[in-house]
Length: 72
Image 1 (cartoon, rainbow, N blue to C red):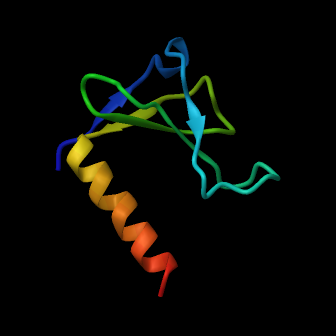
Image 2 (image 1 turned 90 degrees about the vertical axis):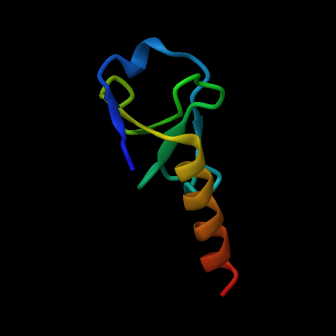
């Protein structure tokens, strides 16, 4: 699964926190929907840091696996 690093992630707008993030700000991820090259993911505690861009299909599979494991 190829992934790419995006060093200038802060320049993009529309980031949203994961619905699985807690309200206290610990262990939060932010994702950016609608990016043409995949799904950028970054640490919400470091919004000016880099992001990792995952292929859309790989991200969908990851989200599905997380949802499935939450119901077990």
